[in-house]
Every structure is written in C-alpha cells, then in structure tokens.
Image 1: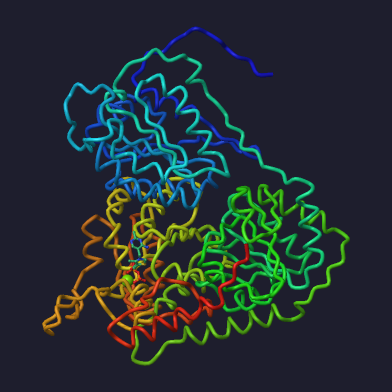
Image 2 (image 1 turned 90 degrees about the horizontal axis):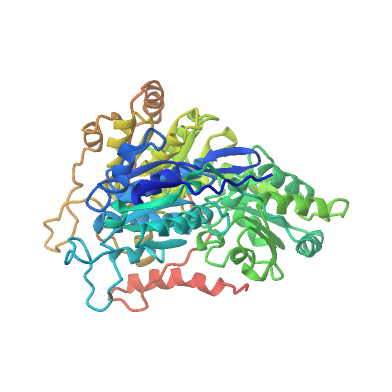
Length: 629
Ligand SMILES: Cc1ncc(C[n+]2csc(CCOP(=O)(O)OP(=O)(O)O)c2C)c(N)n1
Ligand SMILES: [Mg+2]
C-alpha cells in the first residue's frame, strides 16, 4: 500500500540547497539490494557554484559527502568508476563553475554516454536574469540569446536540461534520476543550473524531499523473440558467444555459462566484457583487434554469433572483417533496441540475464549438432603457447610491458580491481590478462579516454565495495595527461596503486603510424633535435615520473625487472598511502598481434612511395569488409 502524505507543508530552500537535499533522498533497488543513487558530490568551486550547490554542501548536515576534485574532466571519470563498481545502480554528482569549469566536463560526459555509464553533471550557467551585463566566462553569442557554452554538453549527454527557475527542479531532478537508472538510456545526465537560480529561494513541497526508492527492474524478453532466436541457435553448428559489458552490469555470468554449455559455444569477450566468463574451458578470452588469435580464428568460422550486452564497436568486429562464414547469422541480446537490431540479426531486447536464461530454457531438449569438436581447445592451446613464447625475455632488451602485465596478473588476487583504458596497456590487458585468477578488470575502451584511469580508480575505491587493491595501469603519456587526482587520493587517503609504463612516448600510436604510413613523426617524448629537419628527433626528455608523483605525497617505486616489480607490489600492498610504480620497459616492443584488421583512414596520396605502399597494404583489409546489415 502506497500511502501519500499530501501535506501542504513547504520548505524554503535555494535551488542549490534543493538539489542536494533531493539527491540525498534518492535510492535505487534491484534484486533486493538498495543503494543511495548519489553517493557524494565532487566539485571544483568557482563563481557559479561556490555560493550555490557548494554553499548547500557546506550547510548540509553530513548527508551528502563532498570531494574536492583537481580537474573537472577527472571528477567525471571518478563518478564513472564509482558507478561501474556499483553496476550502474549508483553514481556521484559533479558540480562545476560556469564557463571552463563546466566545459571541462565534456570529455568525461562523452566517456560516460558512449559507455552507457551513469554520471550526474551539475554545470553552472550564466544568469537567468540578465541584469548583470555580460558575465565573465560566458559565450555572449550575438545571434542566440539562450545559448551558453554548456550547450556543448548536449550531444554528449543522454539527458540535458537548463534550469532557469528553482521550481523547475521539481521536474528536472526527477527526470535526471530516472535516466541515470535506466539501463537502456543511461549515460551522462546534465542539469545546468543558472548561478542566480542556485541561490534563489523557492517554497518547495516537502514531499519532494521524502525518501524515494527507484526500482530498477529487469526487462524480460518477448516470447516470440526467444522463439525466433532459439530456432536459429538450434541449427547452429559452430556457435560463438561474444560477451560485452552488459553481462557484467546485469550479473549474467552464470546464465551465460549455462547457455554456453547448452550450445557448446566458446565465449569471447569484448573489452567491457573482460572477465564475463571465468574458469571455464569454453572461455576463449578477448576478441577483435586487441583479442586473442584463438577467439578471432573461431569467429572467422562461426556460423551463429550470439552477442550479449555489446555495442559491437569496430575493434570487436575487426571493422566488419572478422566474421567470414558465408551464411553467418547473429542473435543479439541487448537491453538497448538499437544494439539488438545490428547486423540484421535476430533481436532479443531484454536484460542480459533474463534474455540468456530464456534462450537456455528454450533450447532445453533441442539436440545441438556441435561442429567445433576439438577446435576450441586446440585454438586456445595454440594461442597460449604463442603468447608464452612471445613473453619470453629477449637478450639485450629491457623487460617488456607484456611481462609487467603478466607479473601483475600473477600477483593480483580475487578481491582486487584493475582499471585500464587507453594506449598499449588496454590492448595488452585485453589480450593477455588471465581473468581466471579472479581480479575484476574494468576496461574503458568504448571511448578509450586517456586520463580516465587514475580518477576512475579513485571512484572504484570510493564506492567502498572492493576489499583488495585497486590498480590502474597507464602509459607515460597518459600520466602526463591526467595525474592531478593523485593529490585527491592523498587528501582523502584513498589507496590506489598506479603502474606507469615508461616507454618514452605515445607508443601505441607510434606503432600504428609506423605500420600504416611507414614513418616516425612526433610521437616520442624527444627533444627537438639538431638534425636540421626541425623534428622531435633528439634524445628522450629525461622526465622523472616517480619524482613528480612523490611531490604529491604518493609512495613511489621504479622497477626495471619483473622480480623488482613483484617486490614493489608487495611493498605497495603493505603501504597505506596511494602508491605509484614506474615500470621502465623496452619502448618499441609490442605483444604479438591478434591477426585481426582494424580500419584507420590512410592517405591515398603521399610524397614517399613507402608511405603509399604501407597505406595501400593497410587498406587491403577493406576488401574483406562485409556489409552484414
Ligand atoms: C584524451 C585522449 N587523447 C588522445 C587519445 C589518442 N591516443 C590513444 S593512445 C595514445 C597514446 C598513449 O600514450 P601512453 O599513455 O604513453 O601509452 P602508450 O601508447 O605508450 O602505450 C593516444 C594519444 C586518446 N585515446 N585519448
Ligand atoms: Mg607511453
């Protein structure tokens, strides 16, 4: 029985105070687990929010924790990490000052919207009343009186609103929380509140601030979709499952195991789906450009591909070259109809767990004529042998990034979390990380945003449900782009361990450049040289990453061997402070390739014949591209 107390009681608050009070009263519940929707607010105060939302936080009586960020983009990544550690059922809010404070959140918003991870953004805005003249940090558009710089958050937000009167919050905040918790539509939710409105008083109805529980239900599949999908699956001879991030968010791993065994289907994983199926002989690891050769070889032969909770980005499909079977068919289980209707497949629009369970159920008793035989185990064995050989130390070379990752993989345990997003670390973690050892791997590759990892790791730690270590593995370029939240980690005593791979440059892109245009240009951290060519071809700039991190109060280690790395990992685990390990690796050594093409735009005209030849060779993959629907 829902009792409603339609009192006429009113509470006089400012817009900013109402935002905080409302957010503190929202709860999500799924499968009987209840959480605060907004666990805290990150902010960098400036004019716009310092006297509004931040004033409300100051006078709040401990219901809404406040965290100080050092960079607005980073605070959105922290909210992302927090949300992911809560399976998208809780997140953090991010409050920014007007102008640059707010536009700095655009990249974080894009990361969240692309990856469908909820974050609540509260940019500040100009004045609703326009009596002040031109506000500092405003666009002052000559042709559009209502446009502000915050409009650039529109395309990267799933919900966007601009609040020009405090009472609009009654509508805007309800809409915001609904979208945050909607598994199909979630992403960045942006509610801009004009700075005068953040301070403006209104008599809000008391009911608005009453505790509210948002039940996040699981969308069941339509029976006819299951029937059609089961029909396709029952004729599959070589079925392959691709598990995406949706498997994690839905908690569908056990259901997936059931379906895989019913079909005898190997299970491959996208980056977001890394670890979706562990400790199982049918798990064949990563798929696609950063995948294992085992999964990619099986994908080439598969006659039915079951995609669960994945958007199928080009890295996964080898830019539409990976599926070679002439009559390949797809079954797509996804809570988002747009993803379920890709590749002319049979859609199952549903929560991943319910959809996969229903498929298993529908296949009960239907004979499957599995044609994989020993192919799956031999593909796996061949890949593992090739990987082991590739990881062997090489004379006169430094240790490799692959060796660093394998050492961490062997060291990290069941309760630990690894965050990785960009550069060669994401490629190599996807390819080589053995998830059967237990560590939860959180990969952000949908946007592959440099600067994501350190703040996201903070967010994972803040979520408070990880008992072990939280590791972030990043490149040195990434460190340069996004290290400022290390100070926040020190300030909040949030224990994270960052492993920085020092290879003196943007080496992932350098390798791509050398492979596709046959030149090395502008990608290493070298001094401008004296060769007369006006290029960055001098010696490496001697940059002391460990010294830089130490200046924040972080405990640091620098290692040149895997045994030193192991010792450093032990010392970091025993240390209460945030830690950082610089691993100095062979700069140009890459892990063996995945034998999966990936399209990047290459020049059709160039001065150097070698450039043209490399570009043409790279472009040859396009001949294998298939339009599958
Ligand atoms: C914000 C952002 N800018 C640019 C890129 C393109 N990009 C992807 S990887 C990379 C280089 C990363 O360098 P580093 O962190 O040192 O890793 P490495 O490539 O050396 O492994 C760049 C520039 C990106 N992914 N994100
Ligand atoms: Mg690098």
